[in-house]
Length: 149
Image 1 (spheres, rainbow, N blue to C red):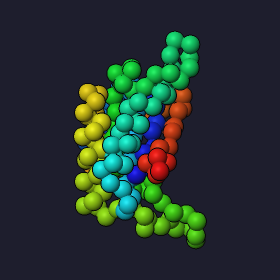
Image 2: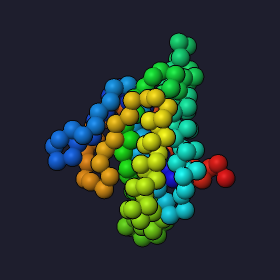
Image 3: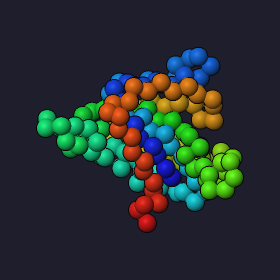
């Protein structure tokens, strides 16, 4: 499972020109689920996401997490994070989990993040979405649950 985190001052996601989720200061988490992912991967990434210290303290150092600042999190499913571009000119998504399994683990990830008490908004699974992000920094971090192995 992969999550691309972007620190933001605000963000929103729309489907068919309707805003379906929006947040203030916090994180946008784009999440992709692989064929081999389990609930343990979702738990690991959820905890890493909310506890990752990428917000500045009084001295301007990365010492505060989303939990520390009571940030908000916008979570968006994005299977394209799993693209394999090693061959040819068209990305392959063979490592992406089938939609039913991906949705199950995506929803589990969302549940785990919500369980921390942070305010959480989401996009809509398997929908064409437009995301507006006001990146803060910019700060963008890639997490991969495979790194824990």
